[in-house]
Image 1 (cartoon, rainbow over the protein chains, first blue to last red):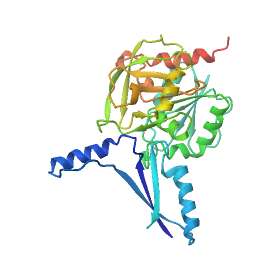
Image 2 (tube, rainbow over the protein chains, first blue to last red):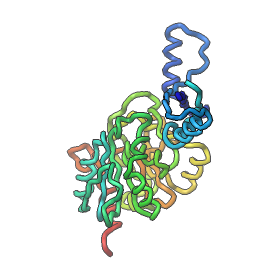
Image 3 (spheres, rainbow over the protein chains, first blue to last red):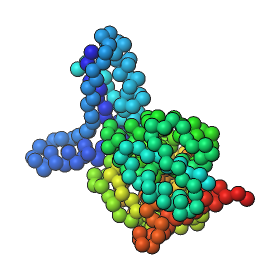
Image 4 (cartoon, each protein chain N blue to C red):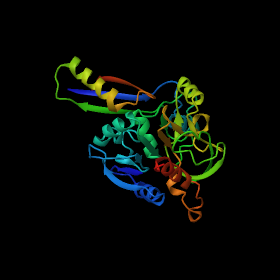
Length: 79
Length: 222
């Protein structure tokens, strides 16, 4: 089954790329953008049909490689 | 002293690092990332700068999980000396041998220039040839050198005197101007600046030489 992993910087960690995007949006006339956080999306195609087991597997992958939990948090959702 | 320099796909300072060690009089071995063991009687493991695995996922993340990484962790666990420079520093934090993380530079720019560092700790084999508080000129060349750590980690680094170098004029947004840090046992050093690129006046500075020379002295037979 396919899962989507969303990795973002934790809320306390300054995101310089997100800030640059926010400034660029402001320059294009989009006011009222209070904040922008940039992250990454990783799509996993797993040879596992049981959704609970697939999610557990993806969680293990996040902890071991996909996210650096010192600075990043992650969310797993069905793709 | 025997130094093992590790090469990952995308490492580009491995040869410079080998030259720096050899110039200090060390025996140098090159180790490939797929190797699972370090050469026998290795005294120092050095992880070079570059763009290991193309900086994919996160800088240093994939290198930190390469086959050789387990041997390096074991080596450090037994009290071995490990030096990580630039991408090597990123690899060490990804391996968990040093705390914190390195984010994109605050300016979002790749910065390549010689900066002045203040030597903050000298009670380590890597730092022993430097004078406490002295200013040294060493080049930086990185896009992701913005050191971050949570407040507790920072307090611990400061309290234990584990900040090795600070930038005099912070180029990348690093918290507390941190350019390099030591492990609790002071045998693992990670730093963004490149001492191996500051070996002679022809390179603009010879201040990096003391790091390798000092280390060599620490391993010299009494």
